[in-house]
Length: 117
Image (cartoon, rainbow, N blue to C red; front, side, top):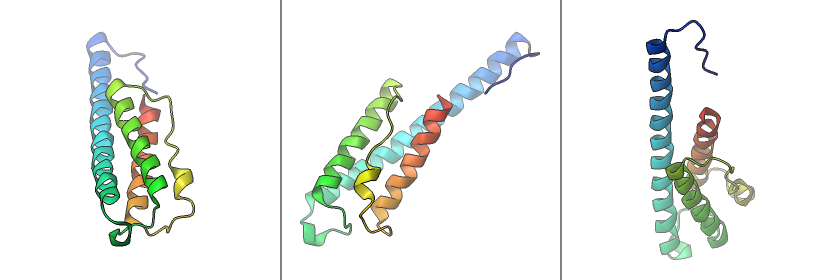
């Protein structure tokens, strides 16, 4: 919570600008991560199953793709009213999977972004 009591109007404005800059910076960071992972997911889906470096099945990958597209759309429109649900598709997957690690990381970043809003 931003406490501005006792600050003059210009100080309050600077504090608000700093908070806004941090929000924009975090939005861009999370969006960039989402876009990069989405590119990875699309690339994986384009490969034959036996050549993939991930243990995630097609159905889970399609769900992750949709979730990432929704997150990117939400960030673009400043809508943060949903929580990524792809975690349930990853429960039975190999925990050392690089894609799973990336998804869990971006999910944590997205959660922090929601808390800033």
